[in-house]
Amino acid sequence: MYLDIQVDDIVHLRKQHPCGGWEWRVVRTGADIGIVCLTCHRRLMMPRHKFRRAVKTIVQRGSPPPDSDNALPLPEDSASENS
Ligand SMILES: [Zn+2]
Image (cartoon, rainbow, N blue to C red; front, side, top):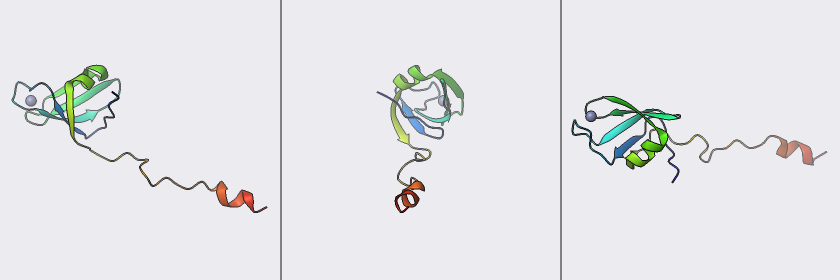
């Protein structure tokens, strides 16, 4: 399964952190995912494939995807047909 993760997403991991926390905030995405424990604020980096397996659920989305439903109309639509 493809995991569409973004900065500021809150995720619930399968494994409990030693501090007792389950939820982490994503602070960096890329080849490695950077997450911060919401309970003890410890920062952790892990490879994307490992992160994908560690996540149980995405608790909260940080920000909506930029191309949701307000795509800009193409300007060439109106001009070309009338000439
Ligand atoms: Zn922790």
